[in-house]
Image (cartoon, rainbow, N blue to C red; front, side, top):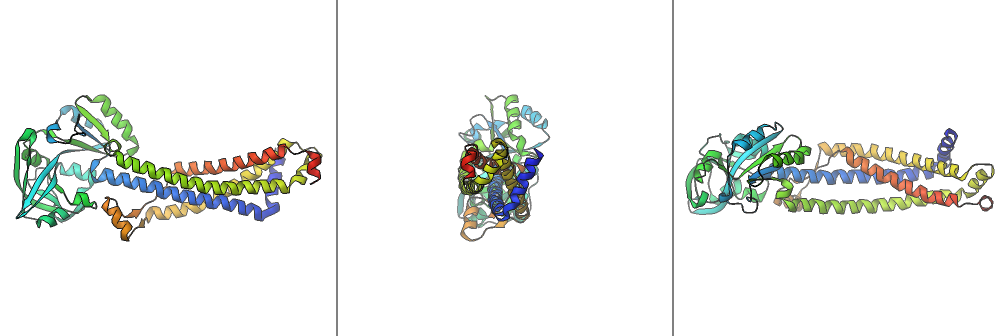
Length: 406
């Protein structure tokens, strides 16, 4: 066995150029695949992060039926049962909310908006809303003032210290009207949110809607996002599903999931085309090596080497070539991915504007994960293995006499 491995190693350097060309093709294919996959998965992670931390959280608790018809009449009562359950999970942070559409007015200007009553500290932990403050000050837990998004403020021509009039419908048809002093102005990257958001403290909103003790949702942030499905399953098992519904961000925003899945499949197709081209190159090289060395194989069989031993030598040769290509490809890809991990590409122009319109940061982030490294390396090894199997079949069909005549 050791002698066969030594023969295979020596055979690599009999034609150094061919060995380097084959290894280089594997190296460049793997490098491109790793970098492409890093950017692709990075963009998905950033999309999910933006969705989760912009507003929805990783999952939410609603009253049963609220997701289908998001009105105050489908709000849920604040429950000690839910509070005690949340306390059992120190790895999650809960942000209770009451929200509904209202009519905002200042002077002669009026516009529809979304009023969100929140616990300022909990909401800030979930969506970092205080980081969006561009003017004024943040709310306190029992504040009677309000925060307003910048585009809505510009439309209403209202500023910090001015009084905002809100009109709406409260719980079970009660009329809702109130005046709130603007404490601060928020700037959201998403134009949709920036055009319509008004925040107040949770007690102030509950009083406005005549819904003391009611919530429309509880949004959750998690330290470890990988435990989301497990935590959601626990909540569903411990809560009465005829009263409450526990929904992940994926269930609340299926369009986003479909968009990610569609883009992911197109990326896999592109990688498949790349590997197909490289695979034919490797196969051509292996068949060329086999054809060129037919007489050599004939001589080795004539002096007593078995065909299976020849096949083993060929497999070891290509394994060495594949290993060299994989090591070089990984070594080149790691610094590239590492650089963009800390220095993501910042987009500009129309592309950046389009991403901002969809509520995403105009950057191309990358992630460094072992799973896609392992999967791409396995694909390369499978391509090499398939090429060697085809060459092995040709070797096994060789006849010593015919091979010596080549």
